[in-house]
Image 1 (cartoon, rainbow, N blue to C red):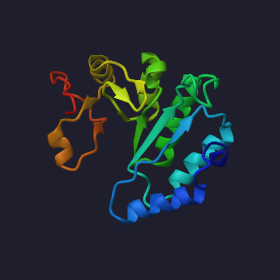
Image 2: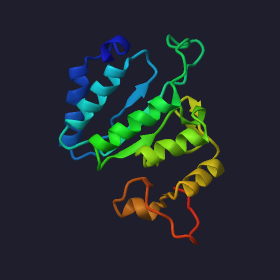
Image 3: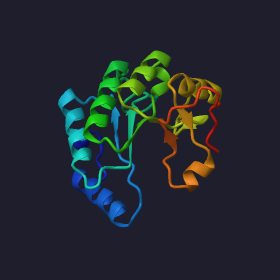
Image 4: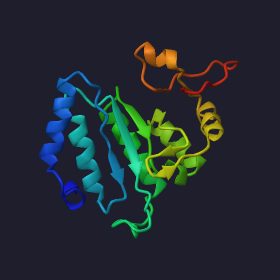
Length: 181
């Protein structure tokens, strides 16, 4: 489905770029956007492609298109939140060491669907006021969501120690979640 959406480079160009990034010792962040008019087989193909990269991407963002007025995809229907949950589950099975990140469009999923995605295998979110062109849930809402899921945000010291930017580590019952700086 890539060539139906991207016209400035080929899919092979994209794969070459990912390989060059990995060969340079840079952590690879590569995932996909759901809701671009792709079918279920396109989603499976995306995950198979990512899972056959050596090594797997460290970060696998799962985005849902947020249709923006005035863009070519403004009339795309919203992605069913359960489809996002399914993709997170399959990504987790196929790439067990990756950070499977709920990314763009998660605010439209609702709290319950986000919790299902965590239970299915997502173990990270991008959070902050805005992700590219769309807003994200409020910082306090995200911290409450992570705490409810038994997760916590990592502090800068965690990143400096080489740990990924989000964590599925279980919180001790008395430990408060702390934001990423």
